[in-house]
Amino acid sequence: MRKIILAAALICAPGLAQAQSGCTAYTGTTVQPQTFDQAIASIKPVAPKDEFETSDAYRARLAAAGGSGPLIISKKIEGAEYLAYNADLGAFEVKSYLFDNTNFSAWDTFYYAKVESPKASTLSNLDVTISSSEVTTGTYSAQNGFGAKATISKITRTEKAIFEGEPARYGEELFIANKGGVIGTVPMSVAEAQAFKPQAKIAFVVVPKLPNVVRATYPYGKTTISNPTDITVNSTVLVADIQCGLLMDGTNKVVAAFTTR
Image (tube, rainbow, N blue to C red; front, side):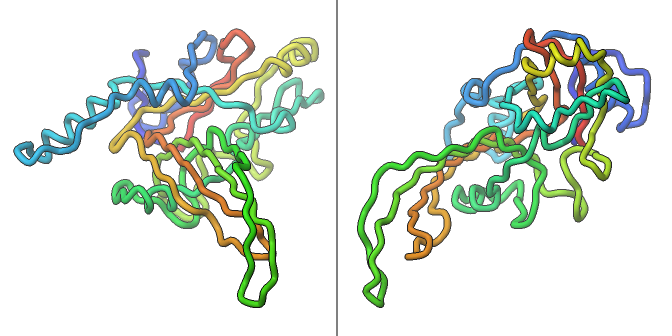
């Protein structure tokens, strides 16, 4: 996680304390999250670098296209079981999987898009999958060299994600969690918790960074008799500093904000 951009007065000097205070400042406020598509649409397209344009001028145009402030992007909760009420504790125990429990191949996206910076790891990255969906678009017949035949399903997978970068060290995750994956607790009475859980929402606070948006279309996996699928991935990735995860009620009032690394 990088420096939080927020118009709140911060007293603490250390960088980590500032980041924590920045996320905490959202708690109790009502926000207006955007969908991923709305956030992408808000980033202005940039014309290719002109031969008479310096590299610094081109980078400045790219940076300006990403906007100057944080974006708040909504996401569907990964699973209600990751927002579990502990009656003995009198609080919800929030697990990181509530925000991020689906993978996507950042490396493949950046490779096929021919993006050299930032780099993506083939193992793990600091990123968030906003959505991943598949549609079967048709079938065709095929056979292998031994004459075995199969009906192959053509599938289009659409992935939307936010990518920050490679982890600084092995095993580093987006959120700091305990052994049970809990990133924080949210105190509530039983009655409050019962009313809150069905309407709970989540969102991410992010600040776009170069190259802002990366798109790629590429084949995924190998089609075989034992794996009769022909998958094409359409990937759209917002490159950004992922600063906070927000837990909200049905009116988009933030009840808790969790700082990323």
